[in-house]
Image 1 (cartoon, rainbow, N blue to C red):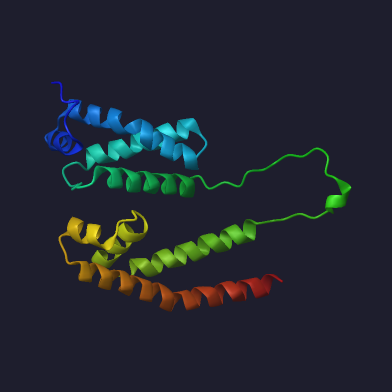
Image 2 (cartoon, rainbow, N blue to C red; image 1 turned 45 degrees about the horizontal axis):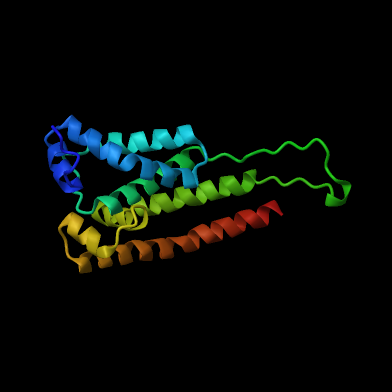
Length: 195
């Protein structure tokens, strides 16, 4: 089947019908661009290949549930999300070994472990506050902030009005703003205790 000349939408219709050849063409058509995009964020070629393969594997697994109207936007958002997850999962602080430390630099050590723990706590609390929202509100907020879809795209994807999307995002942001006061207070209290 020579369907290389088919559009992404036509290939997608075949992919939904379990056409492996159409999926291979879709992969070959987009993987290099997505790989280069990923390489801008993560300078590890093997990790970039793994991220793109995972992205396409997820697409294949979810093909019966996905509705993609703009493939470029979808791939861009999905790649960004995969990169975000990779960075979050593999968050490490690089260590630079220096045999000779110039004397004029002063002798001091910077320990950012407390900051990292505080950041992780803050991130965990924020995640908990978002989980307290209704499922639909969480989904809309996630599509807006993580997948970077605009309100019209979210409304079209979920089959709801743009106004409903705006209301749900506003609701999520109000929840964050209201609860962030507690988070900031806890963080300031923590900082005061370690001084």
